[in-house]
Each structure stands twice: as structure tokens, then as C-alpha cells.
Amino acid sequence: MPDIEGTNEAKQYYTEIPQTSKCYFLKGSNSLDWGMKNRLGRIFNPTSGNTVMLAIDHGYFQGPTTGLERIDINILPLVPYADTLMLTRGILRSIIPPDTQKSIVLRVSGGTSILKELSNESLAVDIEDAVRLNVSAMAVQVFIGGEYEKDTIINMTKTVDMGIRYGIPTLAVTAVGKDMVRDAKYFRLATRICAELGAHYIKTYYVSEGFETIAASCPVPIVIAGGKKIPELDALKMAYRSIQEGAAGVDMGRNIFQSDSPIAMIHAVRAVVHDNETPETAFELYKTLKNKKS
Ligand code: R5P
Image 1 (cartoon, rainbow, N blue to C red):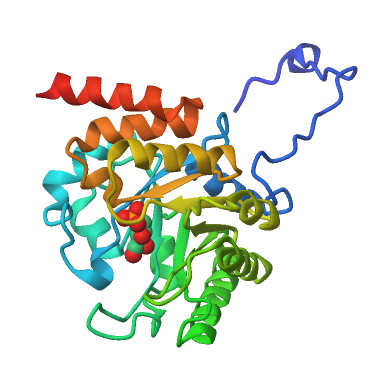
Image 2: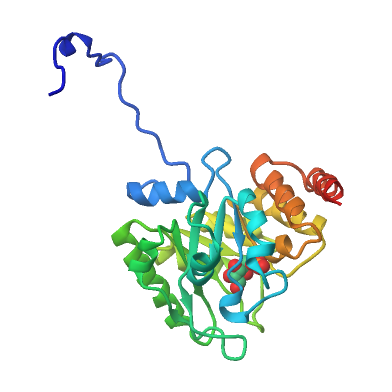
């Protein structure tokens, strides 16, 4: 039996100090439930407000992309420097050690390959498996203007509904078809549709003209995909500008894992995303770390 002698005297109620109630740090997320906020807070750093997601899910429609042939060899050494891993459940279960402390964003749409029409996706993971895998968010591709636009939007709204039941946020990934224009007007449309229909945050692409209007008109956080491999300094400039113009981080793959020095590059990306370093300073960091290694 617990010792209750004298405990009344020891209690301190701080009656003169009102309990505070803080606003949640992420844009548009204040009305979410505790579990949603807790999971988003494992993806986005509450101090900088931003995230460096390492995207390694490319294999789900294009097989062993350059740099992802051996995730155990090429990607595991990068994991400590990412805030979040974005990947499929196949790679998660087969390669990522379950004692990882990293948050996981699970790709839940799929069903197509580069050999066919890419927008013809379905939901490819059951919500119960996302719960079993203790993921921090589910990612679903949305092809606005694509051949199967409506199906992919409904994939997203179903994911949002299922996720709300279990407190798991949904990341809507705005996909671009081969022949689509990638401009601010298109991405304002795509990101806003995803947010209006319930996505908790959205991945889109950076555009050099008008990105700030995409971020401003989207009521939830935006992260940018890296896109195809470009020179390191250019990728850092893109990441920097996106943050300055309203993005809350990057979901970057090829520009990290296809870099000459992926570990140096992810450090440099972190410097831009979390520490507000200029691309030039971050590039110096990249070169120093790259040279140290060799
Ligand atoms: C692409 O299919 C995946 O959704 C990737 O996660 C996304 O494109 C980001 O990777 P990257 O920076 O290589 O474009």
C-alpha cells in the first residue's frame, strides 16, 4: 500500500500560475487531434518548423532507380541525418532496422509501373498495416489533370478518412504527368485541391516564378520534392528559395542519394532547411564534408 502519510502537506498547486495552452507550431494544424499533432511533430522539427524528409520510395513504380539499387548499403548510412524516411512497406520491413528512432512516412498508393499509365493508381496498403508499422504519416499520389484524376483524389480522401480514425496524417503528393505544365498556376490548383479535401500536408515541386503564391494559398504545410538530379549548388539554391518563399521543408531523394557524396549533401540540405544557411555556405559545408571523406 502506498505511503499516504503527510502527502497533503507536500502538495503544491501553483494556484497563482494559470495553465498555458500553446498554439501548435505547424500552419493549419491547430485543430487536429493530439495523435495527429504528435505524429506531425515527429516529421517536422518543432524548433525550425521544417523537415528534411529522405524520399526513397521511387522503386514502387520504377524499380531499382540509380542510387537505390542497394538500400541496405547506400541508404542506411544516410538515415541518421534525415528527419523522416519516406518509403514503401516492403523496404521498411525488409531493410530498415525496427529500432530506428526516425519517423516514417509510408507510401500507401501504388499499382502502376513506368510501363503503363502512371495515374491509374489505387490504395495499396491497408490502414491496419500503417498502424502496425507505427507510421507518422501516409503518402498518397494525386494526379490533378491526369487521366485518372478523380480516382487518385478519392484515393487521397479515403486515406484522409482512414487516417483520421487512427490519428495518422496524410501527405498528398502532387504528381506531374509527362506533358503537364509545371507552373505556379498549376501547383496552386493541385495543392489547394489536396488541402481543401483534407490532406494534412502536401508535397509539390518548386517553381522559380510564383512559388510564394503556391505556399501562401495552401492552408497546410508544403514540402518540395527534389526532382531529377541537378548540380549540388543548384539543388541547395532550390531548397533555400523554397524555404524562404514559404515551404516547410523538403522531401528529397535523387538530389541526395545520387550526389557524389550523399552524406555531405544531406548535411548541406539540413543547413539550409533547419539553420537558414545560404546555399553558398551550405555548399561550402558540402565540399568540406565531401573532401574529408575522400
Ligand atoms: C517519386 O515517385 C517519389 O514520390 C519521390 O518520393 C519524390 O519524387 C521525391 O523524390 P525526388 O527528390 O527524387 O524527386
